[in-house]
Length: 97
Image: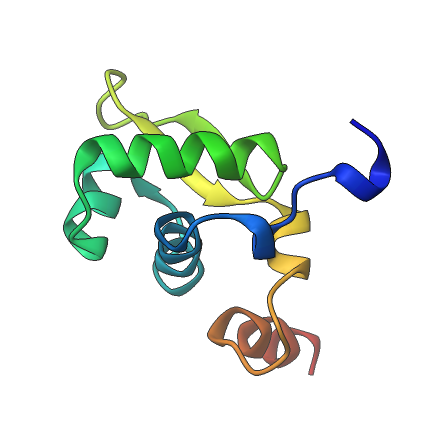
């Protein structure tokens, strides 16, 4: 896939954008937590997380409280793609001050 054909957050379906926003507002969550916060089906959340991981804005890690689950969080690229008026961007500017 060439640079011009590369998928971006804007190209993703609304469900993937919602999952991105849930992670932006709530920080790291398990898939179950994302399902509860977004009110999407588990299958839809799995698909959205897969798409978000493929474009490099979400990272999957081990959830130490229950190793059967994974913890999902925004990557640095994902945080950088957030517009300046979002809560995540506000947190960053507060930390810099």
